[in-house]
Image (cartoon, one colour):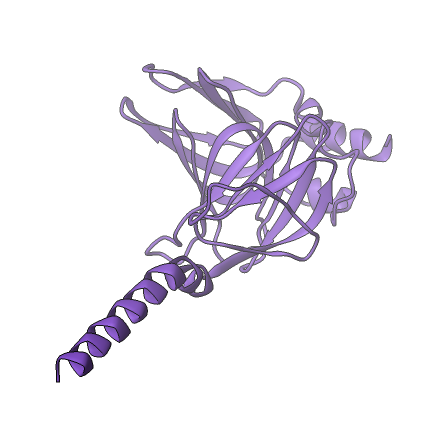
Length: 235
């Protein structure tokens, strides 16, 4: 009887240890996929929420809730969300894929670097979080740049509503917002909108000139449209 009881406890202990060892794998398998990689150039790595290890990322790889992607000195990457929104990451950037919001919109946290969001045809535009502000975007193309001290969002199409502890600010096409650590959000005119996308358009992207600057787009001033198309056609 004592031997049988000992075997029972041993079996229970083994099962418990196996369950603990498999928990990260089970959690990873259950994490919903929110995007896929379609461009990865140079140094691009991914880290899952259950791991402290950075691994090289591959084209077509799925990205799940909790995954963080970072680019190195020579790195650039691009992703397509499940709902159709596109994101391009520049060098020395980092982006974490959050749990989908209650509205069904994807959510990301950008901790550093520069990204380009294109969500004009997406079913649900992403929510963007940074250390200095959060941004809800509406049918928008925009560039987000994050440093240790500030975040700047440059709106090329559509509109955004940016918020932090100091309040909310709305911005439309041709405008930008900047939030510095502990400061209210400031809005300004985007003088040279083509400059905002110069870093991005030299890499492969599934966009055309008409995607970025449609001829009948009344939300983008004529100067904005002309300068963006000129920059695209020059590359």
